[in-house]
Image 1: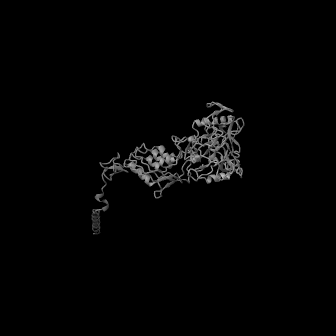
Image 2 (image 1 turned 45 degrees about the vertical axis):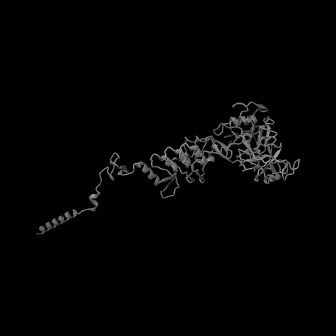
Image 3 (image 1 turned 180 degrees about the vertical axis):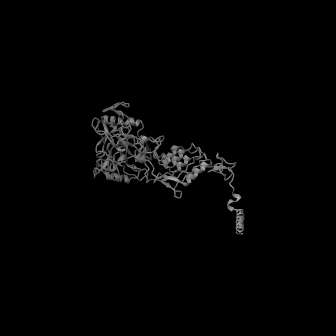
Length: 544
């Protein structure tokens, strides 16, 4: 009996289990059956395709617009999720990064490619210098890289670039600071004229690259060079030239000669490089009524009193009385002058006044068609003498010499209007083992080293044959260029040029009145004077 009861119990248990297994299971509902390969939501076919109307995206068949491909979507996602800002740091998507770009219609997938997006954001993968862009001998790569901590305003003008050919990658490069192209462009500027110290964008510097609104619907309307003029260009250094001296002739050690050819004795004179365009020709405009007329210097922008009085108001020197002034009286005369309807006249600085001298002329050393009635004597400048507490600077228009004298002496005065011309400032850079010094105002590049004492002829030859800092186009400076190294606010030496000795240096300019003399500058007290060409002084070379 026991066996019969046990058997019945086993049969009932099996029957109950069988009934439970036939109950429906929501997790295995037939509605969730795996779709067929190639259909929407299903895996793609092994060849990466799907049924009609579907596209393979991340291994699944989905319905996408025809204009959006898998690779493009992945690029877009990558750009949203993470922006590389620094070689050592990743900026998370939640951080605020200003990467504002111009409004762009990207309906056409070929319109803006991946390289264009790279130009919009700072890409540390290409932060190293491109050797095809810059001459490594002339630019130190470490000095011209924009640091990751720098604040750069990359606001661009509103641009319609519906035509993919309208704006190319180089144009975008001009809009934003791109670490891949931060070196000079050899097609725009001569790298020989660029000094890295001057084109560094400092890590703490804020660069404003805002451009004017421009309609560039015509791709030929605005070229790359035009954009370069809008934004601060690391390629550029002040390329302004110093005025020409006025000399047009050549001279040997004593008299005028036919200008020599390169490689011959006395080659490299003032007039020869002026003819080659190495200085700015003098240019003046005359305007105003008679006796109230003015001369505008078209190079410097200064406006000069053209007609001088027979006697100066407030002055008592000379004969007749008042025809010359003490220094203070000359300052007061110009300050109180009303001329050509203007009242903002002033006595010119030494630098400004000395630029009127024409070293191709003498007695007077000035263009008398532009400045008629100029006296053969000294004219006061407003500059005090740093080497003489009771002295001030004066310019002789008999020959163009510059010197200082007691303020109580009496001389002529000519007044000027306009912004005061800046004094030179200098930067140093070592290239090929040699230190070169660049004037950031004039753009001139100088050797820091200089010759021993030599004659004028040998000074010309020294610079013409010099190989320094990897360059061979050095020359002896003309007198106007050499004068730019003077700083009359200091003395002994009267210059802020690095390592300038208190000595005399030759210029390439002869003295037109005594052609066996040439012009020099003494950097002890800043005098501009002349000396026999057979005497000996130092030579410092220049290029641009």
